[in-house]
Image (cartoon, rainbow, N blue to C red; front, side):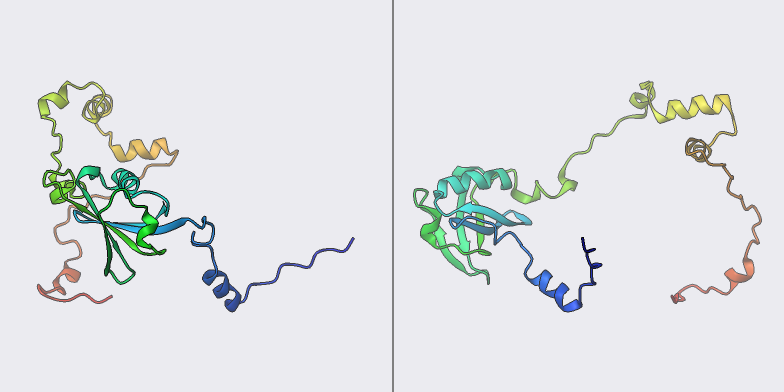
Amino acid sequence: MMAEPPPREITELEALKMYVTADTGFANKADGTVLLAVTHSNLSSRFMEIRFDRHMSIMRCKEKLQTHTGTNVSAMRLQLKDWDGNVVADMSDDGKMLGYYSPEDGFVCHVIDLDPGSMSANGWLEDVSKVEKYQMSDEDYNKRDNSYRKFREMKLAQDPAWTIEREMAERRGQEYTPKEIITDEEFMKDEADKVAVGSRCEC
């Protein structure tokens, strides 16, 4: 039995060919499937390459898009845009099939949210600054038994020299070396005197 030859290195040209001909999802799809990007009137994010069946009704498309965008089906209007962002069709007939509007792979299905009270309006689904954060008072935090504050108090009662850095080093099985505390106010004064306010640093 002959030994197999060692694998040869792939040339740059072969690597480029493999990259260009790689399967991006367009090859392994049914004939009736179309891959559309999805945009939304209230959202800045863009959903890439969502699979749709050309035989789906527009109503069924809306139902599918509701799970992605959060917009209620009854408040949704769909537009089909080409690769350059031009509106190809206003898909307003819920009973028509998606294929009626002749979508192509890479086209954009744009969702227009008609509900002024939609949960996606005014950035509520994307702007986390609009979400009220829970804040706990010191009194409520002190009532908790399993908190870092209680843990720290317990450790300091056992060892006044305890630090979290030493604790973590010991848990990692490492020898803890405390950081040197510099108390000399003239430390590196010569170097500091060379720096003037407004100077630019060079890398």
